[in-house]
Image (cartoon, rainbow, N blue to C red; front, side, top):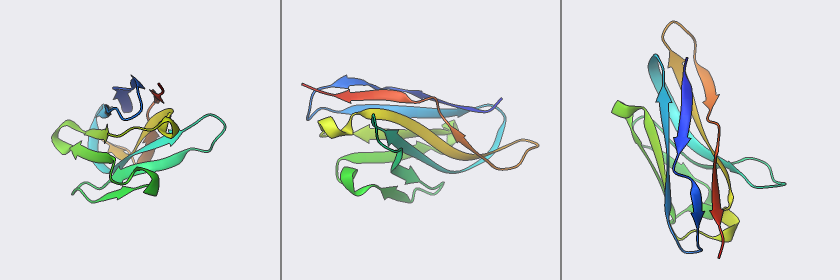
Length: 120
């Protein structure tokens, strides 16, 4: 069974840093774009950043210059390094990826989410 498993969320003071990781597991033939979304209480889920298999990246304006997305294709893992965190970055962060399992078609998968809280 293919799934995305996130780790690395937590609580940090403003100005601090966190790194979240997301590993795709199961019998995976190929992965296209991988990305991170977030959803704050009472708000819609929004794209934070995404990355193509060859490393092309895209960021939300609100995180440019502070967050860095990267991936390790050999490990089917995507990372989000978050620096200079602000209280408004507080949200549940979700991993997302377009995956092709063996013997199946392309599907879009979501992780279970990991909480990031920025507070003094």
